[in-house]
Length: 420
Image (tube, rainbow, N blue to C red; front, side, top):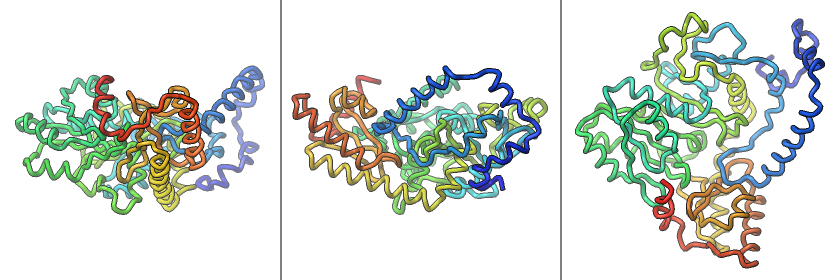
């Protein structure tokens, strides 16, 4: 019964509870002033959400049925496959891990993973696993990778090398080949990004692995950062191969991007063989702790589980197709309006010359140097995009400087160079 949306909306269980400290404390500490502030914040969020097109955060469902679970101290401490007896949602978390393991072709007998507090933790887990598997490895990642790679290298005290990218954000395979050659056989951890942060370029795991094979590399660990495009491209016929059908080692993705979780979270997936608990964890927490975070938010597991239950594989596949088609359609619309735009194949990130500051702030565009981008994830509608375009055209007609380019990709390297 608990596993159905109807059960989640059914509040009759409240009258059957023998333990209810919440009502007493809420009466003791009324929050009239807080309620007014929160209503103002809610109204602000509603208004801003109508002009939110620059970042890859979907809006799928409201998750209202999970509101009652905020009263519980839900702690998914430790390994979700070895939970303790406390208040947790580890069984829901395992369902999430198993669902996405199946989509990414990780064999059920060896599938393992957990829900993280964001993609940075998920990527870091993959790199930690590589560090522990290899002897004195070097971390390799492209200049278009998420900035957290620099942070992770610093925290783990890993030597690293940054591989060059092309002006359109795609990986320079010749530069990667050169970096590997200069390692002289030293083990390395390689992070590949499925949808780089600004351009949405795909760093192709299959081509990279073919390169590693041609160089007879044997001591390496490949982590795929599929933060945005992993849960999107897995449904798309003809998309580049990126999952465990290839000999990758770990893969991670975000829960708050394409999947629309209102709480920042991520998922990391791995083969179970190299997973080891940290020393001394079992007795105190009542669980083996194989995770980086220790105490973990159990509500995120319910959120990602509810997406699977409510939207499901067919719904996610339909949303993925719609997102990519909207990107194609709006890119065509911008070109017809005389505004140059680039968008990678199988992508939903449109890059163009940065409009005036007021317009960029109003529509919450992601900006870098002279360029900006928008993202056509679920919740961003064709009507919103048309409103944005009309406001831009009107601003230019009123004398705001015309920043329309001939090609956003050609000047990107220079624009980004001053910010690194």
